[in-house]
Image (cartoon, rainbow, N blue to C red; front, side, top):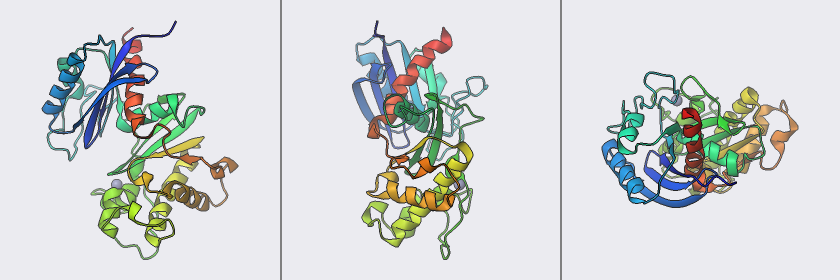
Length: 296
Ligand SMILES: [Zn+2]
């Protein structure tokens, strides 16, 4: 018999937050999007949406921007670490959700939720191990194994892997921690600082475009060598620039120098998210079922 329980999902992003009601297989029945403001305002929005829906919900799945402690055994589980989002540093998200919406909660990162969504219904559906990489205002990633996010000390920070700068590239890194990391060289703010406009203003043959593709190809090369994933999904606003995904794949293959399984050259080894912008909220709904299993 089909599971007819209804779940709540929250995708807490850096600029917008999506609330949804749906089923554990990721089917979305209702949704509402708000701007991510101060945490108290977003919690009030969440309480209003879920209480006002008229549905009886069994659990809540949450994908949240980070850094955030997602280890359920940690004393500070569910707390945001230092972040440049005003009001969110140190915020006790799990405690606030317990007050606003009294439901069992399963928490993952926003990129983890997107990866789970792709694993359940999208581009990672037929793969045992995959990586979901988001390239937007920052670069984040999640390692998905058997449909679940690989547990970690905090969560992977693959956007801060160091890259080799191209000859003549002396643009300042936009990462305040590292001079040569992927995020500091090739995320959205780095692209705007370098070129004064976003990547979708360039043609795939332009040197500016090829520079960013090279850096992201280096990052994917490192992921192939470390994790040997069967597929890597490239999401986020920067990755949506027309022609970027195949250009990154060519750069990745070049940097691997022939030292990798032949599958990395397959069309769609690097791929956009099949669920598009719904990957994260879909994954949040799928995660909600974990909250019930954890308390059973
Ligand atoms: Zn960095």
